[in-house]
Image 1 (spheres, rainbow, N blue to C red):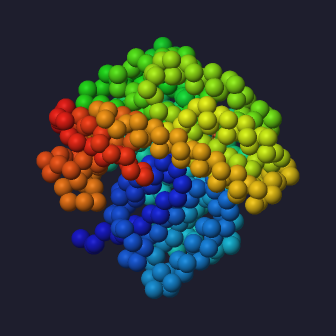
Image 2 (cartoon, rainbow, N blue to C red; image 1 turned 30 degrees about the vertical axis):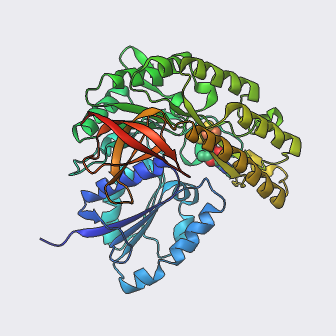
Image 3 (cartoon, protein in one colour; image 1 turned 45 degrees about the vertical axis):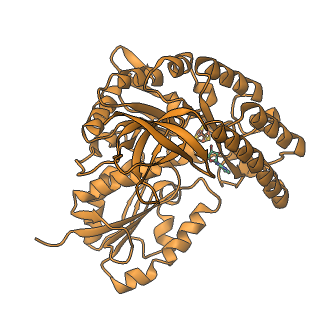
Amino acid sequence: MADPKKLYIKTYGCQMNVYDSERMAEALGGAGYVETKTPDDADMILLNTCHIREKAAEKIYSELGRMRPFKEAKPDLKIGVAGCVAQAEGEEIMRRQPLVDLVVGPQSYHRLPEMEAKTQEGLKALDTEFPAEDKFDTLRHRAKAKRAPTAFLTVQEGCDKFCAFCVVPYTRGAEVSRPPSRIIEEARELVARGVREITLLGQNVNAYHGAGEGGDWSLARLIWALNDVDGLERIRFTTSHPNDMTDDLIEAHGTCEKLMPYLHLPVQSGSDKILKRMNRSHTAESYLRVIERIRAARPDIVLSGDFIVGFPEETEEDFQATLDLVNEVKYGYAYSFKYSTRPGTPAAERPLVDEDEATERLYRLQAVITDHQRAIQDAMIGRTVKVLFEKPGRDAGQMVGKSEYLHAVHVTDSDLLPGQIAEVKIIGSGRNSLSGQLLRSCSL
Ligand code: 5AD
Ligand code: SF4
């Protein structure tokens, strides 16, 4: 038998892309590929791109330029571009960079084996359509010998919100939810392979409305159904829009045993003027009321958020309103970005804030966020948390896992195994992680 062909995937961007890269590797596994960790010995290189950051397309073109020596050394090498840049640029990629053999949008990954076959005939393969069929079904998981104890499970894709700065509604298309029966089946398969924690994924995950028994299911209903899956210990979901935090979902945070006390709820800005221009359809006040209700349901919840600074026409006063909101919410984690223009989005038409001013605001915001993050981490010292251990740490005998609150926790105990959940007393708080002492093992 011929040696398997080698596939190297470079993943950019969000968790959705990490998940998609795994599915692509599985789809191409059926076409005889095994994954390799370096591009040097690859027979196919796939760049799974993200369009959300500044000059994303330009960066991909330079990265493709750097692939030339690989292609020269191995003329049979196939080079592909997947993800949101593929969706946005389409044919233009092959026009600008002729060494690209394959361009595939996020809705077409299940067609990868056919597309690969086409490239083997020396043809170019392009697919950036939004098909009507359910790509999730075609991209079924294939059994993997070994599984991490945590997994992502996509439940919804796309977004109908059209925030003025965002490309997702254009690159990922309209919001589509998978039927709950398929998600539950897939969760059971993951659990059978050793997964104990599932993060439900979607660009606007809490807008989930999958067609199930008795009509459309909300995300909360889906979470309750997953709560009944034996062997599944933890459920998380990301990313949510504040306006889709429905009563049943907020309530689930207080009552659903397996739903973890952590919520990523982006607000983007604390200024109502900017929020309106961002087309966020919520105000700072309405966001704060949602947070208040979530905290009433689950007082110890750790919150995280996304922020954009230097959105067109943001004044110092608008930025102050963002700082005020951050100081009121006190996020356990937060991701902050300097606004970058996405051609084709409504915000791209608006006058920009001075670059240096925006950079300075970003640093100021990040300093405040870091203070809260540290305080919340430090307050964990002395508390007992349950840690799901994932992998060995850097030091000998060390294991690293995540607490209920998504804090990374490391413990030195050579008997711990990945997949084990154990009670840990927190004894130290470092830059990005906590350290703890094992109290007792809860379950294997
Ligand atoms: N500029 C800067 N940040 C952006 N994000 C999305 N689009 C842009 C943009 N054009 C950020 C938002 C979003 C996160 C995933 O990326 O904060 O929540
Ligand atoms: Fe983009 Fe999120 Fe707004 Fe949807 S809700 S348009 S994904 S920022």
